[in-house]
Amino acid sequence: MSIDRSSFLSALIGEPWAWQSRNCWDFACHVQRELFSRELPRVAVPVGFSERWVLEEIAGHPERALWREAPQGPGGLVTAADGALVLMARLRFPAHIGVWMQPEARVIHCDGKTGVAFETVLALRQMGWKKLSFFEPR
Image 1 (spheres, rainbow, N blue to C red):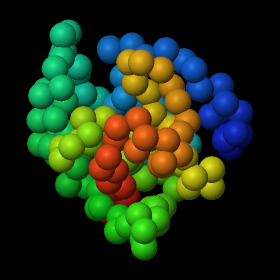
Image 2 (tube, helix red, strand yellow; image 1 turned 180 degrees about the horizontal axis):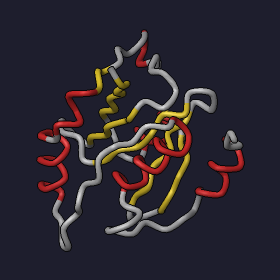
Image 3 (cartoon, one colour; image 1 turned 90 degrees about the vertical axis):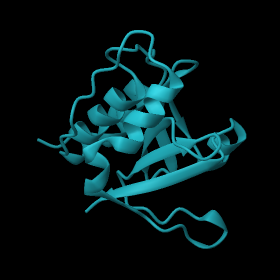
Image 4 (cartoon, helix red, strand yellow; image 1 turned 45 degrees about the vertical axis):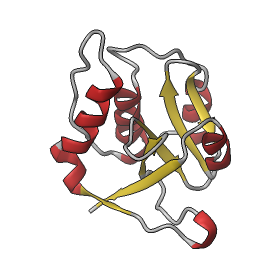
């Protein structure tokens, strides 16, 4: 039985963020599993986690080696395949993750301020996520 993508995505928008069950990584895992049949490893998020912890966890996690960075097109055009993981950085190092929804040309992600949001690359950049890197499974 296939999932209705539009209904699935619509139902998620606005759901609240929760550090142990609906943080950005858990949310990306949920979307990958439900829409793309990909199982990503669980990551235990500690109580009182810091941005430094997130940076180190993203940089050093073995799962990262199983994905390749998709090249950007001219003018920053996104060329990544549907379902690519999107690492977001305010400066140089990623501190947030979402999932690229290619047909909709948006990133679905979950953060502590807005919960689940479905945003364009331009909107993310305007919110301060200056560096977006798109990763596809190898």
